[in-house]
Image (cartoon, rainbow, N blue to C red; front, side, top):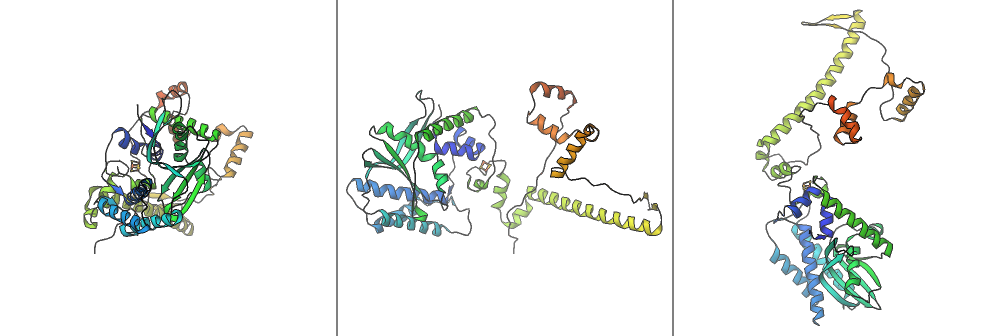
Length: 400
Ligand code: SF4
């Protein structure tokens, strides 16, 4: 049986294909986004702080900052990558160090309760059968006495969540479920986040109903994951940090050519084909505009000369000026009103036509009953088609 965790559930929510690569195919990656690299070093540093305190050793602020910088150096490798090109590794290192120092100054001498767990692996049972269980790693659990516990989590993200987002956060609420399993005196559990980059402590409390709802939602999500056959690639801003860009069909080509020097980039077959297609589409647009211009000029010419037929080298063009009726565009409010009028007149059938794009969507998405779709089947032929959608790409610098 698969072992789930908050990060595993998040991976599926963010991109089912990325989830498959990581958790089903077990593809390992040696790439490390600098944000994750900095987060790991900050966690390890605070872990040392509290482990040392357990053994009555108090680090000074400088000793702790030195430790952070030492493990930064020791763990650094060539596959640490930076997506935000305006920042350097040094900017990130310094940000982490500042977060550690701020944390130290805020909480020293660290006597806010007794530390019960440090980087503790816990198992969370979502229902008594043990069929749905998750594992989690709690950064720190604090025992405040009188049955009150705090689940602490360190974050190095450069965005602060709203209180509403925190009150919906799944990770720490799941960890909360584990606390009474391990500590029978636990009566009240608070969730505490330390946003190190902002020197901010944020908190949330969950009711029993919220926790019951959370369990139901997580079980439902696990059922969805376990019944998924097609793991769809879900493109988003997160793709930039994805470890599978070199194999994912959505990113593979972008990833491969972005690493090329500009001259080689221009020589790539895919780049050449995409450039040719875009150039032809632009030409098509320009030609359509030119045709419209020529049409107007022909109309004016025919009117001035008082002719209806205009002779060309290979063709005779019949040019007529007539009134064109315009109706409200589809999806506009007036269009809906116009449709209503036609229906009220009992004339709608006369002016409506079968929409093949809509029909395609219905058949492809199985949006009608199976029996109804079967009735359509004799009228459907299937051909292979290529669909191309254009979107903006980031700029590649031209060679000097
Ligand atoms: S690159 Fe994007 S779409 Fe592809 S697997 Fe990763 S997150 Fe998913």
